[in-house]
Image 1 (cartoon, chains in turn yellow, blue):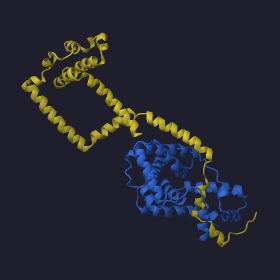
Image 2 (image 1 turned 180 degrees about the vertical axis):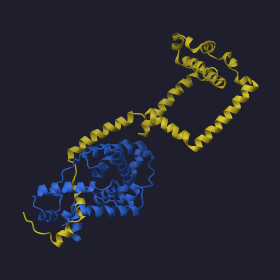
Image 3 (image 1 turned 90 degrees about the vertical axis):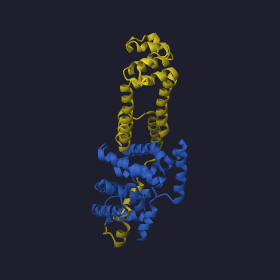
Image 4 (image 1 turned 180 degrees about the horizontal axis):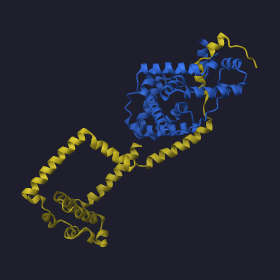
Length: 183
Length: 211
């Protein structure tokens, strides 16, 4: 092996830049890319089917809630809601009476009867009678005591109970579709 | 100086930043992906996977990590491509995702600690450079290249991640200072300063090969 001292020409040839460019030669073999593509496809499918974790979604919600505009908007809505509910409660407006709701002829039988008894007494047969009715009973029972909400639930169960149920389903489907679409 | 330029052009592999027409075709593909055409994203993957792998590989120094992180970067790009507004070129946006993914993993210390380098082929080394290296060494060509590869990687990994990233993007990937500044979200001056400092360090580390 020749072990002569490097000449000035040699010094010109070998620079930090030219040595670094030798790194371009470090390329994986062709077969590496087929395995790479296979793994990438797997990961992409996983990303498509997986939804954000509860923690991530909670953090996202918190992020929205924590924004100044959201806080301001939330506070305004809460103030207006309190004013309306408080006004209705103290003045005894019929629009906010749960009794009026329960006695309404438009309430389905099961739903109406559930207002007169605890939610736990609703029979399995009643629940199986249809998801629409079960949803209405459940909603009304759960929300009993909150006057404004009961009135809302009554409207939903009598007029749009099915829509509410399916709308709920649609929201979750839309969320999934949103995630899928995003990916 | 001419010989250095010849060596630069002789070393193939990863090339510099895409030309303008290529950037335009990227935007067409991006728009297609944004309109729901997944196959268009596959075209972008095929086009950029090797470059992204090269960047991440030279930042992390590990082939397996580089493969994982390249895939993760591409998934991230796919997930957020709807938010790409075209304010920067697609490849700088993509490189930015790759660099951030790599640096994030380096910060978390999740990477494998051992290095597993790709084999450097003798075929790609310019003959005059190889001769010059051999003339300074007692080793044969194969052993010399292996040793040089190890020393190069050792020198590169003795730099901080920020300095290493700038060196990788400029000297190995051939990106210009402005693109690197865009990718690293810093000023062009900072890029130049980091590059200057990093080269000084590399000059010291690789002194034995520089003659």
